[in-house]
Length: 421
Image (cartoon, rainbow, N blue to C red; front, side, top):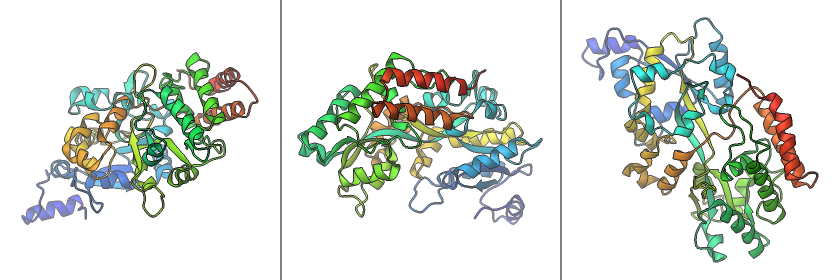
């Protein structure tokens, strides 16, 4: 149980406290999800990383954790940041909620990094840092990620005589179609369009293009994205993609993989556990994860979603907040947080023997984290833009327009929604 500053001081005076907190110590208010607290403090059962905040608290004071679900976290943060003086000193922030307007309410971190740098700062995933860099300024430090892997059913592949994963994504597309040709009851990819076109976005990365870049450059009408749409159509028409792709949901993806209706999926590494659940899956232990095969430039096309640590511009404890960010971002802290269930944002963390021992896909995940990109940066009209992307792609799949026409429509419809500097 956490102690207030007053209790810590009293305990110290009685020589009962573990920590010798300076008289000038103060508390800091941190807003985030319950999982951010648990991976930082090691409070969940079965974790082995311990309390990563222990030393920091001994030197600086208590951490007042304020936790909520994803949307309420950001609702609270946005309200707080409009006040003259906010009550939140440090917040965990999910990339999908970002926008240029939000950047105006956050404290740029470059000055803090220059004066009191995070240890081995360059070891933090570059692509993840880029997603919170706007107009040349860094506004967030990556803390936790969910990065896509290629998930595959090793038994189905073995039964079809497929003994290895292709080295390139183009070869993977051919394999996905061949799986269905070999057994019409089994499709290649279990993915869906639904309310978020994540599969198309990852498919674009695999063709060497980012659909929407961090500076809001839209690449819908590029040759690479037109080729992306043509590949999507080829997969859909030839059994390389489940036929309920347009109407499916995350639940149908999970069910298709657990039941062997599909052999492949582009989904986060962390989803392997539920797909191998012995009580739910026909293939417990047979679902494996590897890095997505390389794009035409030899780069691993890893799409990611990232939680960042940010400092509101109206925080009254900015120096203290940066100090805690530094403590939670060090190489050692990153490994210990991973042992507490976090997704480490440093590729080097996956080389630690403690992580290798518990994560069979550690080497593959390291490759993915190193090249990971947030494929769709946030902005006020992001949800509508993604709807348009899905609408036009679905119309193409249903034969109502060509890939080139779909791409042109996306460019024309989404461009007016984008932020301008």
